[in-house]
View 1 (tube, rainbow, N blue to C red):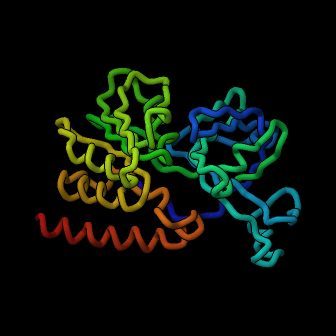
View 2: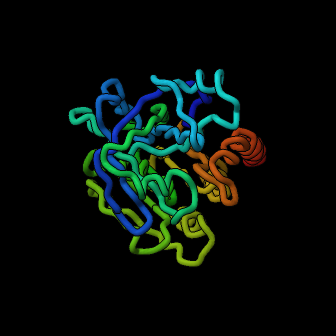
Length: 282
């Protein structure tokens, strides 16, 4: 299973805000550039991600920024907070990094920053990480997720050759959140409305008539929804772990700090349940 690798200390970079754009009512784009991206590379995975660094209020860290040095020299309450965002696009010629942010009004940390970011502002980040890219040897591809997975799904669709066999499902709040991609694949937009997050996505994938051949699947979003889809794909359809990139990007009722602290235990428990299901089905 193409899960994200174990945490490791990633190189810190700094970048300058070049421009911003409101894509939809709840999606903000920020394009970063500048000399701090001279050695940055993000060209092997379509789910590349970076960890943006937000300083503690009133705290200035020594340059060049180094997270380990900060943790060694500053009390814990002065450590910065990180937030993880998928790389929507990386232009190696222009040295421009594009990140898309789901907005929840003034809630959260990164979303409000993205709404207020202005050209010339500097932000530090670490990365990139990443583990998934569509493989040429797959007979068909399943891409499914909510708003949080939309940048990776879009990047994946744009990386596939014309004519690739793809089934793509994206759950969003409503039609105003739909986006256009540089791809000939028809995306099935699932409008959530007042339904619980993930319900429409699980329903759509469960109803899908799977094409013949070897599938490669990328399924990310709210953790409880992903749990349901993991069982569907692994147990009901027998897709091997190595053909799956599937994980909860977030969990209802948890901020990123709380979710990341419990994510490994959650995934281990779900994996154990899946193992039991595999054994029962054998």
